[in-house]
Image (cartoon, rainbow, N blue to C red; front, side, top):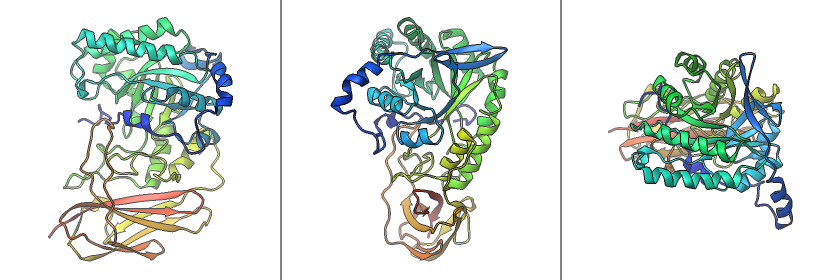
Length: 442
């Protein structure tokens, strides 16, 4: 898969993620008021003014400072975010209601079938059934005041061959325009290349603007949008760390993940050179992922841990959205060394041998740090397009904490690929993370 074209992240699995613990089903006493609030659509449109494209909501300019996912909405609103993105209409009423309570909007995903999952766009009956189903979904939610944009499918260009999918996208966009005059349409692409731009221009003119998922190549998107002949607006609907397909790999094909602090640096730089600079075409963006998921590792794409601690990337997003840093900031991790080597050094260990682990973590607020170490076998449940992956089970008893960011690892007896994780906590719900893949070889 070419990194310049494909982003292997389809988050249909995210549709089942729960809302944060502070969010709940609307009580019966609020049902009437919620229903009333949900029947007042707010007009959203794209305007071109003096050569610049802008999104308008309720007659006012609206630049998207968004996040992918429907968790931790209180934090999102408090840190300066204004919108969330979903990948389907699963639990859509609750998502819309919870977002609206916090002054957030929703780019609502419509789950359009993918060729790589076996859908045949040469089957007119199946295509018609899908259109009818999506029409029901649009009619159900079109008047909710939190609704911002309809997202038609996610990464339909990932591992596909039949360009008729763009005819179907156009029919969906046309249907939306007929039944919902208040919200624009888009379709989310895995990366960007000229072929898809040409297809969409020719076969899907009803799409109001492009949406692009991009990671390591995000800074190239503004130029490529223009080079490939797209003359309208676009938004970035997924962006984040260097993707697992884009960075270094070990000889045993384990992808090397950036530390949480390395991620903080690249999130900031990519946002500043893309979303903050392309004021002519870019309508805003949705950072990925405002939550946590297992994809290659449990820490790769989430800005939060499984327990809800916030990484340094969350601090960066608050700064980018508001211009101010949080009062208490996350720990900063400078390095993780296993047997004196870093993650990119292709670490080979002998079974049952003892090895030193060292990490250097500092806290900007001088908070006392505690450490947790975790040893996992390298994941073998590797999927495409962000499909759900299972988390490897932890191996206990082989890592001994020695305090102050140091530990000792007894290498597993079984030959194979493993990954060592460190979590450094500041006691204020902030965390720094890193991991190092290694291979046990006799």
